[in-house]
Image (cartoon, rainbow over all chains, first blue to last red; front, top):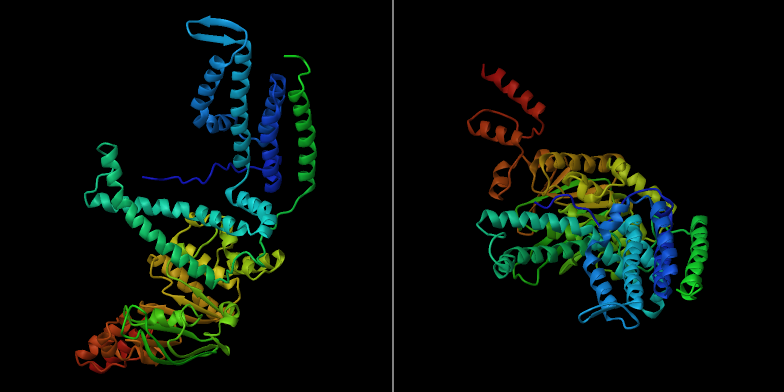
Length: 270
Length: 277
């Protein structure tokens, strides 16, 4: 019933983007988000579009996957664009009934839509080129300094690791319980929303109980393997900044500066 | 050496003691099987060997470390490893080698050293080729071998297996038993296996049968399985060979009891047949 379990949306590969340190990628993704927000005019967005296209080309991720990642926000993009298109004041170009479209409205609608698309496409590039495990390692390393102010960076990363590890196990178990309950006459597929929700109870309760038991056993097994929290723990694969990461930072900073410069200061008076 | 002196243990939820005056000494390099019916206390005993449970009365020492000594808990856990029944609930990471590395990582070893231990442990259980796979793509027997590798990577002197094959199919059971036997004979790791499969127990050097929290039999498999009537009374099976000999004796055929392997049994039957003719 539930087959083909893929975790996250990582697509294995060996491109420059794949080989970068996860910390580099996370930081640059945030920088990218900042650039998108700072940029205000359409020329800036065209530049960012070029930058993004270049990154996608470099990553070797097929373009249709990027489009797929945009699917959940299509409605949102269109809604925002329409809202901006009709609600922005200024000198109206077209008017019909109560609807007026101004030049400013068109520009604002376009920039808003592009902003959203760039944000999602840019961040999805991070998850497409970084495996969840490596991503977790990167997040842990970046949050490490916050441990000084008692932020539980290691615990957070450990929770994510375990969650990732147990997703397939729990899905498998859900499938098993569903089959067992179906064999005894449970019906998960017919009826209205309320009936379907009620049918989930005999599925969820055993699942919860078994998950708690699993958690208990796992905690015991971890303790037996000497786990005592993050203090003094080392890693099989230590993260290391390479030359490639430095280059990536430099190139990205240059391009980002260009985008901001063009995007912030209206050079061409559009 | 693990020394158990007059060990008693009572669960909070239960008035009857789960362990009732156990005295056992497990010597270095031994391969001990602990047998018992459900609820006999065999798992409870196993959990005392690395301080998952602490004695209500009596003491447990592993290489001179008292398991009740909380200050030496980390040392004790490194000395006595434990493999549990369900491999799924022991594997922490989503890549085989990362999981095996979990123990050494906790010990704070440098990463080159961890790499050495991980590779060695995976080779020992024959899972090295699958080091980059995700555990959920492995069979039960393979997963349990990964769990065992995770313990080996900590280089313990003793490993306690708590029904390591109970959730596996026959093929998985065979794989895991082979790995366990090799650990004992090739690596010299002292092995304690809790089981209710007689065929597995027959592989050990020594069998300890527990019932109602007491040691009933403590002997070599050969001698232990000779007590067929007693074992049956305790709700335990005997290996098929022993069962056959037992029944034939019941029919009045003069046979030696203490035969364990199929070959020995065949030999004994041949002899008996010659005598009859």
